[in-house]
Amino acid sequence: MFNPLNLIVHFGNFLAQQLGKPEKSGAICGFLRLALKKEYGTEGVDNLTPDKLKQVLQGELQQKLMILKVTTLSDAITATMKEVTRNQSLFTMNQA
Image 1: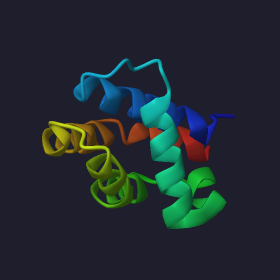
Image 2: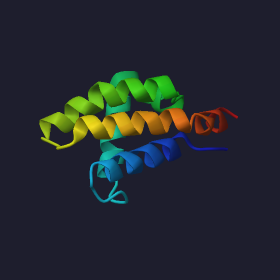
Image 3: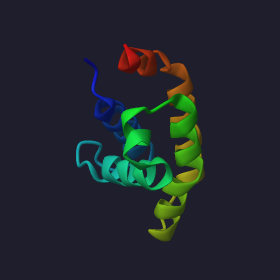
């Protein structure tokens, strides 16, 4: 069975790359997971959908990264949201 945390790692690493951060460090993935949990609780992480992920990218995660004064944040969030849309099939695999 596909683990929903794999989605968080995939899109967290993509966002890290967009921000010019080391994608394998896990920091952005951790922030993404915390933002998802704050917004939707544990069930939100376990039942991740493209819409939930996009909402968290534009809301809670963006706020956390703004506090850290991450540069090029807007472009990175936009690119990551496009990546979520392009890879919606990963979410279907997660539900199977």
